[in-house]
Amino acid sequence: MRKTALSSLEFNESKETAIKYEPKSIRINLSDIEVNKDSFELNIIEVKGQTVAVSNEVLSKFLEHVGISKKLKSSFTENPNVIADIVNVLNSLKRKSCDLELKLLISHENEVIDMTKNDKGRMSNKNFFAVAESIVNKYGLDVIESNVQNNGVSEICLLNPKSVAILGLDEEIHKFGIRLTNKLSDTEINNFAYRLVCTNGNTILDEFSRFALGSVAPSEIERLFTHIQRMRMNGFIPTEFELLVKKAQNTTASLTEVENGIKSIISKIKMPLGMIKEETDIFISKFINTHFTQYMIRKQELLAKGFDIEKLSPSQKSYIKCESSSFGRITVWDLVNKLTFFGSNDNGNNFNQPQSLQIEGGKLLSIGSAKNKNGFDLADEKILFLGL
Image 1: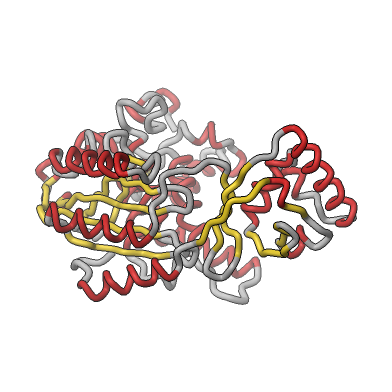
Image 2: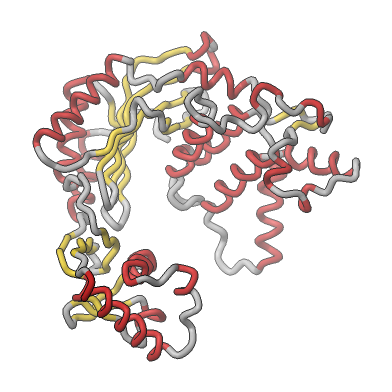
């Protein structure tokens, strides 16, 4: 995560890339689509007789519209001719009952990357960046990050330059702002928290801040700016943020919460090329030992007591503290900062889409909200009687 705002040149370069990668859209009917014997091996479909490449997700969406589940699709490995005929017959039957209108999004590389039956409020990348510039100029925010994916999905993080000491602690100095995301299907905004100590970015998904366009009508754009004005009146600080941080700091993470965090991080790591399974296992083990020492020690301590956590279910492990006698504990706040650290302090060489870990951290923190029925696994020390 950058410590300084993007320059005008950097922002404009990002905008030009986003405009270049802007997906095209066309409207078709479900009946315009057919599959052939190569569709499931090569990821292709025929649209009005023309062969086009599609993503796995789009192919699965088409099959679901026809009436074939993802689970059934996974078995399409034999008799491709027969399978294609069955799918086309099902589509023909579907057409007779109701010919569904669909919107296809096509990447700059001419691959169909999205298929939807409902129009949502997604503005073009050109307008998306124009809105961001308008917000920056109106509220004096800094552009701290701008990311564009090859499919045209764009994210911009805007920060209020004012620093806030959360809970009055010097180690918890934050800045707050907005994360704008132009997805394939819609445009949305959320609060964004930036922890200065470790330069961690954290997208907080609270009910107050989250907003998605319902359309691109002028009235809806006006509603977006009204919503941002309301966020500004709160200093762009997420609802109950200090209470959430305090609760997360005072709650020991469960083994399940820690394992879920570890899985999220590991799933984003770019493994070195050419690794065999044994080498990958060693790489992952070293990573966990280095960054989650308390978790590894806790596993050993429990094993010495006769509890092999590898044989326990996630539900059972949600009642067990991640706290070792020799290395201390991992709190929920520690875990949030682990996720956001790896999501914020990577130049793209070690992780795939690291920004998603910022969102994971925000989701974990927001679970502690009073409005969330689930809450942290070990909030209020509900299971002290287990003695584990």
